[in-house]
Image (cartoon, rainbow, N blue to C red; front, side, top):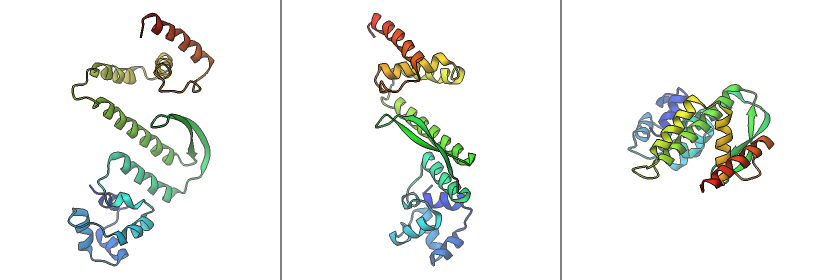
Length: 197
């Protein structure tokens, strides 16, 4: 589904209504959505202004994350949320660092932000599993899923994951949940060293 079709359905707007706003025939909208004609560049800024959504979204096939981003923009436009505060979160990606993330006064926005982060994590997890065709560590992935289903609220799981993050230098040394974590890591690293890991 191209973005224009998704956006129109999200905004509950009929093709004829959009055609009237753009001063064109309904058939043009149908051709754009069916992919038989590209949306002319002159209409992209108009669509961006009309919906408050970046023009790149109108012309591409959308993935789940992009659909959530569009839903977020629609909610922002409707609810006009105010940022109550900024929360520090550790972001893992090209650059692993602490970032300030806005916390809004409208729970709907905060909820969709969490949904976007979850969708990004699921996407990255899928990519990690697809690194090789016959993944030799598939049992490890199965175990990770089991742990997330059955023990995600266990402190030992979080402490061990953070320790592994430091051990493999995914987390910078300066990111720590406290002195207790540092002591835990010191002890677990000794075990790793004793067993030549």
